[in-house]
Every structure is written in structure tokens, then in C-alpha cells.
Image (cartoon, rainbow, N blue to C red; front, side):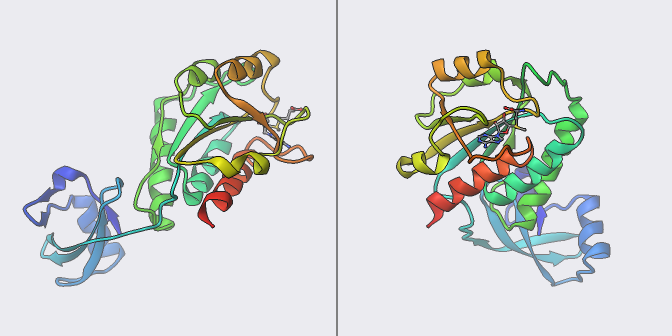
Length: 230
Ligand code: SAM
């Protein structure tokens, strides 16, 4: 499989870039007439055939690997390269949109190169897990700003301390969209939780054990996919 930009598709032909020609010819060792799948990262896949240095579309494919709900994951940026793993795992699990957020306890300002790197990781993970859609990764903003920007009716913030309902218990009514936020190593501040609640987020628990900042989003997404895929 290779990812192509919409502009590469012209009248049934795929105008391959030099890198794609190299990948198909040298890495995958495809020859003239061999078939491969081209995908646009937005839900469209085409069975394609190598014709010289270019390719042609044989047929559009129907791919149904996406979840029936749209999931936005807000994650407070963990230290180091922990976010790479969050992007990889959450893409495999079917996330729709990943919103890296800056929280009061982790005021890391990632470089533009990091954002590019996360987008690349998401594209590779989408391809690996045979998804028809590459999740969107938003520019980082503060958590307080992110919570004001979302009006989805199902909004949850995971909080490790306190007597909150388990995420499992609140998932039975999800219809088409859900937003879930997980905090940094040091946890959300009281002000962040209060602000999120004021903007319609419901605090939820992921169980009695304290999960690491990179584990919590994966657990939350696993519970959501289990609830909406069966
Ligand atoms: N030191 C923090 C504390 O005591 O609250 C723990 C933070 S935890 C390492 C990182 C984030 O993962 C939390 O902010 C929360 O969003 C999520 N998290 C971890 N364990 C959780 C649990 N059992 N229930 C809900 N959220 C959890």
C-alpha cells in the first residue's frame, strides 16, 4: 500500500513521485503489471497497477475498517518521546482525531518537527492496521483552550483520583461522536478539571490503579472500541 495525494490522481492514472517509484520498484520489488493499493488517507482506496514509472487505477475498493463513532483523543503531552507511542497505539485502535494538549503541569512546547513526526507515525500506523483513514493530529493548544473548542455531547476527562464513574459505565449511550481527555504525569490541576467540567466534560475513572500518562489513553480507547464495535 502507498499513500497518495489527491493531486496525484489524474484521469485514472496515478502520477507516482520519485520516492514512491523507488518504494514500489526497489523496496517492494514490484514489476510492470504488478498490483498494489493506493490510499488517500481520507477513506478512499484504489486497486492499482504499475505501468512503467507510473500506475493506473483498476478499481475503487470498499474498505470497512473504521469504527462507527468518531473519537477525539485529547492527551496532555508526556515527557520525552512518549507521545509517539500514544499516536501509534491510538491510530491502531481507531482514533479519528488526536489533540495534543499543554497542561499546567507539562508546559512543553513541541517543535513543528515533532508535529510532522507524529503525523508521519499516524500515517504509518494507519497503513499497518489497514485503516482507510489517517487520524488528524491537531496543533497543540492548552487544555483550557481545547475544552472550550468542543461541543460534542459526549465529553469525558479521565481523572485518576476521586470517586467518579468508571468509563465503562457511561459508554452505553454513545451515538456518533465522543471526546476523551487524559492527563500528564503529574495529573490535571484542580483548576483544569473544574474548567473542563464547566465546559461540559464528565470526569471518569479508568479503574483503581494509577495508569501512566501513555497507558491511560490506550486503555480509554480500548474501552471505547470494545463498547462500540460489538
Ligand atoms: N500523579 C497523578 C495523580 O496522582 O493524579 C497521576 C497522573 S496519571 C500518571 C496520568 C493521567 O492518566 C491522569 O491525569 C489521568 O487522566 C489518567 N489516569 C491514570 N490512571 C487513571 C485512572 N485510574 N482513572 C482515570 N484516569 C487515569
